Image 1 (cartoon, one colour):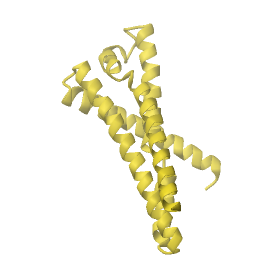
Image 2 (cartoon, rainbow, N blue to C red):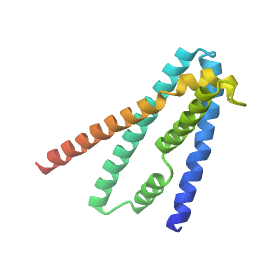
Image 3 (tube, rainbow, N blue to C red):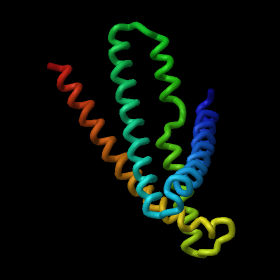
Length: 160
């Protein structure tokens, strides 16, 4: 697949999954779980950010750890193909970033006009999600550093 097609596919998948995440976040978290309560919905959304990022980082760390052992033994080409395909698809983190870009745009529109058509009735929802992008970036950078440190520690330990 060409680079342009792969990038277009990645962006479209991220956008589609961001819309799916919005539907789950709005209907399931905001209304069903939090009952429209802004504080409870904010806490749930932040918890989901932490959970998704931690699981994704652990998943990549474990797959890389296993594949480096497989590579050294020159066995299991099927696993290496699985790993390549798994890591080639759009990540959950990209869905979240795409989702929160949409949240920022919608929050800005509502801030400019509280009765903006279609979004006006969703102001409480956007209020509960608007700081998620800050937490997403902070947690993402923190976990990136933690796993970088873990990788360096593993390399140091393996060198002994």
